Amino acid sequence: MTTLSRLLAKLDQYERLMRLDKPIGTLLLLWPTAWALWISSAGHPSGLLIGIFTLGTVLMRSAGCVMNDYADRDFDPHVKRTAKRPLAAREVSTKEALILAASLSLLAFLLILSLNRLTIELSFAALFLAASYPFTKRFFAIPQAYLGIAFGFGIPMAFAANLGRLPELAWALLAANITWAIAYDTEYAMVDRDDDLKLGIKTSALTFGRFDVAAVMLCYAATLAILGGIGWVLHFGAFYYAGLMVALGMSLYHYQLIKGRERMRCFKAFNHNNWFGAAIFAGIALDYLKNVHL
Image (cartoon, rainbow, N blue to C red; front, top):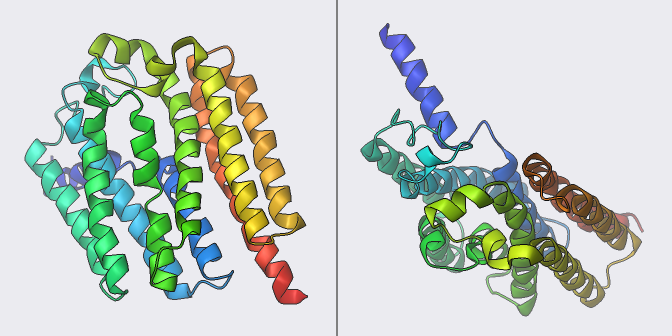
């Protein structure tokens, strides 16, 4: 194998370790951040902030994936869906993984150095959440709630970047993201339920047991109820609520997918949550755009 071939093979391993070939996680991280960027700027986020938060989302999600695989490197080989991940297959060493995660985190930190102090301070909390989440599956009954905080921490950071403070609205939006994350990541956990049970990993799918489908739908309902309340406080109009109605329709579609608890249909529901987040963002953006043209 030539030097170039070895380099390309290593880059491919790093790409898979960072999950750049599977963008769904980045999108689930990006949508709530975009909600917050638009709301905290009253529909006028700067191009600079959009760029910083978008690239930062990609970098931190990639770092989080590396840390997740590092934490699960002894579990993943025993799960069919994850057995071929680079760390599980021992294609990448633990030292390489830690260096990669640290490098990605450092790049993300450098991105926000031009922002205000509060945003920079919050970035340390964001890093802690991203690094610690993979280990919560050892002892938290519903680690998906912790994931919701980690995946939604772009929300308070976006408010801090735009306003220099954290109003109650930021925490309400974060709460909506937490319930949404429990919904979609429970669908994801339903795919690996049998393997997780054998390995002793804690997930919401196991904790909820036979009430897993009901819990998912209750979390979708809570998410939409919180977002509805936010819309009422901000005096949003028809476009925003149309976005929520589209998201509601998608959640009912997800019910049809997961009610039989079939692995691949549950995985399809998880992946489809990209459109749930996109529908809500479209409602927010269109509502602000409508006000501009009035």
